Length: 454
Ligand SMILES: Cc1cc2nc3c(=O)[nH]c(=O)nc-3n(C[C@H](O)[C@H](O)[C@H](O)COP(=O)(O)OP(=O)(O)OC[C@H]3O[C@@H](n4cnc5c(N)ncnc54)[C@H](O)[C@@H]3O)c2cc1C
Image (cartoon, rainbow, N blue to C red; front, side, top):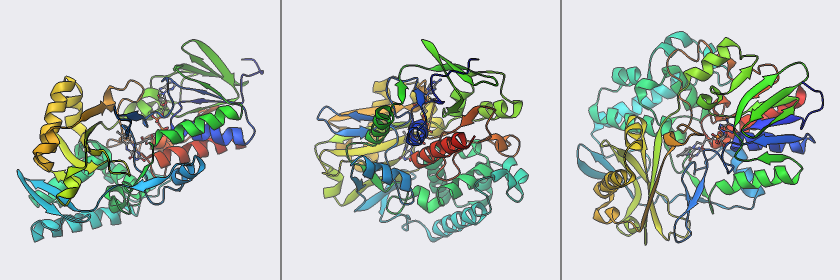
């Protein structure tokens, strides 16, 4: 390989991890080429617009306390944040009947259910506190925690039927996967990484607190514009296929060309990184890690109405239901409250199934669920849009990769370990806010720092 390169560093992927890495590098005076498979930046973040111009975040949308990097980006690019509407009663639908509650905890369930819920959450939090975020594989008793699934733990520790339903909905909405697919060790790591079960599942004070005015994708576009403004190159529609390295540098072959540099930062979701061809081959441990990590699965479903009619009736728009395929909804209206927007998630196994349905059939089933939770008016939106992220060829699912049993304690230690000139970023490599945009940005900054000191 020649010693004259196209840039100092190649960044593969222009999601938040790749853009944060590139931004850090150009600010440090390095030259960068960012190569991105899609024709847009943002990756698992995308803002669409309804016919009336209302922005809809069809990928990630929320920020919450301690996600300081994301709030800093919002300030940097002049975007206000606003709290999601949460005032009013939340719907709790169990065994076919709607009830309601206020706040975060559904207090209006049987005392036994509530006690079991509280105990289970507290127990998980205590166990999670023992997981070292930088090295989950060194947790006391790691091998045994990593052999069990979160589902095994729930069956053994949450005997009250309604409590189990609520815990399962909570788990699904955090991981977008069935509890039986998730290693207990990974679940504990993930809980601690995001600050605990309450932080992960709460709106006020938690990960679902705030929205970005005009849509969160503007922050990715802002970063991309600054990278390009500082002389960085951004190649859209250019999937990387091969990464070759030798003593002189690294060469990335793309559809339509190749670029060379001293180092490369790969920021792809693990299933996509596993499809790259590496020369020489990756270490067997690292290759095994990439192959072993499936993505969670979500269909994000959004319906708009002339106004948020549930608010006038004293409801918040939030709902939790033990009936699928929509287990949770939220009020996703813009700050102005016009139009009213309801957001629902289909997650895990159900999302895999519904992703293969015709769009009209999916729409009918989702709106029927919205109506069961929020009344008949919810079945007649002005507009409806959904996105099955598992069908996105350059994401293959979301919110993030899920560690099945036995991965953290065998090959997990390679999660951030560079392979020669190849460095790794992406939310899946983050120790804090793993799975979230904040974790993606932190991972990009960390990988850039690694390259700068190499
Ligand atoms: C529906 C949904 C809701 C979510 N909600 C939230 C939320 O509210 N809050 C939150 O914090 N997080 C949320 N998330 C998770 C969040 O979106 C991700 O954690 C974050 O965006 C991941 O960023 P990343 O840069 O690590 O990866 P990505 O965004 O996946 O970036 C990787 C990039 O690599 C590109 N790429 C793939 N293959 C190639 C290739 N071969 N060559 C070149 N480029 C390639 C992709 O196109 C992509 O742009 C949500 C995700 C989804 C989908």
